[in-house]
Image (cartoon, rainbow, N blue to C red; front, side):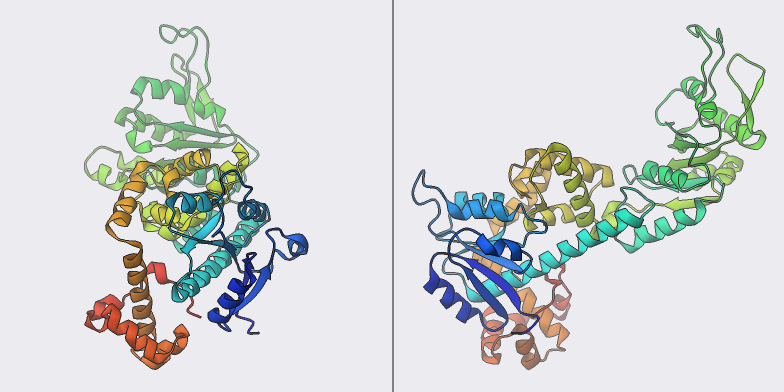
Length: 474
């Protein structure tokens, strides 16, 4: 048997059916049968299959009858890194499809399944499991070695961000962190503090956004008793609280010009006076600042002091928005999903392919913070082992549901085959013989598909790679 063969467990009481399916799938697939719907000795070999096929054709036919296939699905989901499950249903029953998906099915197929479609789904399911295993390995490795705590560092842009953060963290200089709201600027500031020589000291954070100037001044510098009406006692400000540690000022671009001058003086002299006092208070702090605004542009417009800008901007670290690093959405979403599943005691382990596609296609104006909140809501709404499309807010569902209403199942499958053949033909420089070999089909059948799908009428630019087909063709 080829080492690259896809290993399939076929769970069914219908032995002739599985024998027929195994012969039809061909040598690229190694099929073993679980005759009864229980694991028995196979439990010790749960890491063997790449994919589990479940025969659900008889499920749900007798009301009140125990349904062993669904019990088996739930049992498989209790294993660490369970293989993806594909359910074969007797008919296109939407209630049964939804129930299978809620119980952890990766995909569903109608019986008898189209063999071209089945091969494609099995290959995609194997690739899905490989990606999941690699993600778990990277998360474990990162948890053991990363100094950045809960940050998920899986894309090149974020690797550059954290490489720069690691470089500046030990150096006691001011750092300006820029990026849109919700990108994690405060978490990065805390990580820099934890890797610095001041890690044993306090980390004090304060946001300057949308607060009156007098309140910000009191929060930063404190006051003496009787300094103003209602000042019944002396109060330390954030600068004093951060002594021997790090002060993080978020949304520094919202600071009024008068306070900008006082902040500059504190940074130069390392001392200040509380409100209502003339006695200087000496402090030793490291200042980290963050903003979603363009401070250089604000300097040109006279809204921000240039001397303070240069003082704060010794090193600038820019965090790109989530829409510019979409490859990170799956890893971040899985990270939040596992965290909230543990927090809420839920059995959910993954996103369905449709739900993950909806997450990856969304624009994320609120960035990582919005993603975290969406995943938290989805985990709360989920009762099964997978987050489905209907567990997400309506803004995610409407677009995909409308697309599904407009395109029938057959049309979706036809379009998938068309894009797959286009991709393989492109990779083979138009050679149909080589394309047929890679697809594992006869050259004559490939010609019939090309004619049926009208591929030769497609303009050259349609050969561009589709992210949905970014897989290994076996």
